[in-house]
Image (cartoon, rainbow, N blue to C red; front, side, top):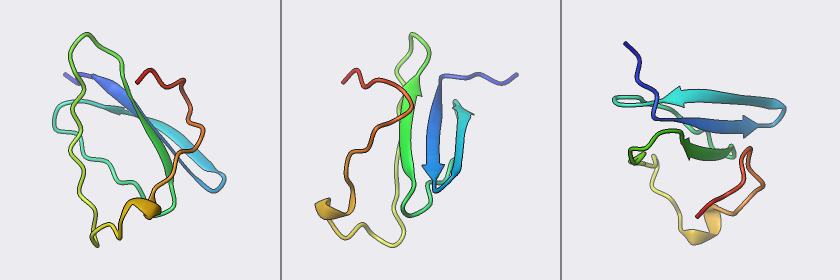
Length: 72
């Protein structure tokens, strides 16, 4: 049984998609992709992120308009 706790939106160029995420899910975010996570349940959605190669610093990431309105 698939348990969905949330969704992730990602967009790279003209390609855009929303994928279900839950316990044990693994997703990739290609360099240059816009992305956003959304919690759909009453339980917290916890995401752990690793960058490879290591992120060069704070100037690498910037805010973009996502698929959903931000709540925090």
